[in-house]
Image (cartoon, rainbow, N blue to C red):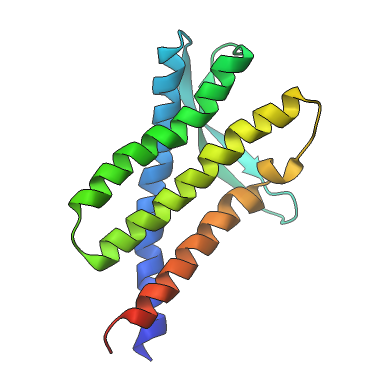
Length: 160
């Protein structure tokens, strides 16, 4: 009945918040980049999926020159972490259950990026390869699963 439709609508709302959160994440990468003395820009580049015949345009912060190891770690961690800080403040100010659920789901998504982005740099510096961390399917699929699960949970708890 109404719960699946409501869940789908909530997921769409969560995706809208996700687009803003991801854009903020990329802008915060630039803030971190400039804080460590680097320069760079936001670029839109195609990101090909590994297992699906699909390529999507994706916004990324790109350093103008390679970064030293510590600066690279900070750059990769600070983008999602600073976006989490901003989104967390917004989450505290929002009173509605649906809006708060979408924001909390996006905080979880940003937390995942705050782990996997520097982890990829650490593994690469150790000579290890973890291709899963850079697969588009993983980077878009996990957030989508979080948003779907949150939407289903909110829809199940909504009054009939």
